[in-house]
Length: 92
Image 1 (cartoon, one colour):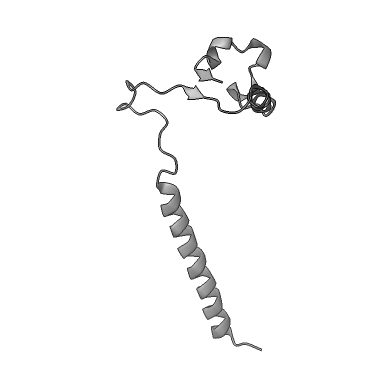
Image 2 (cartoon, rainbow, N blue to C red):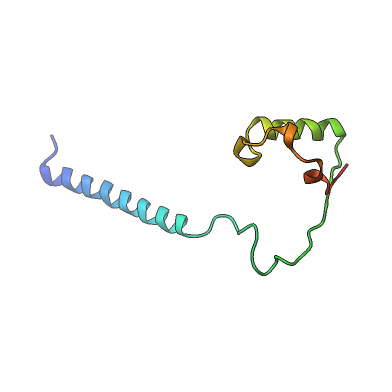
């Protein structure tokens, strides 16, 4: 049977490791994980249009898959109401 001081040392070691982990996670989460999509500096830059190199069926399946997962306007825009000009910059 262990004595009380040995148990306290073990508990103190676990607490110390847990606190160290929490501090590291706080530092990790405090740093930006993803750069901002739009910044004031590059707002005037023109973006290159996309060139779809797969076949048209793959593009249609991708669009339907994104819609089915609710990734377009949080799932609030049915694909039937999507404007064709919203995809005008994608060439295939």
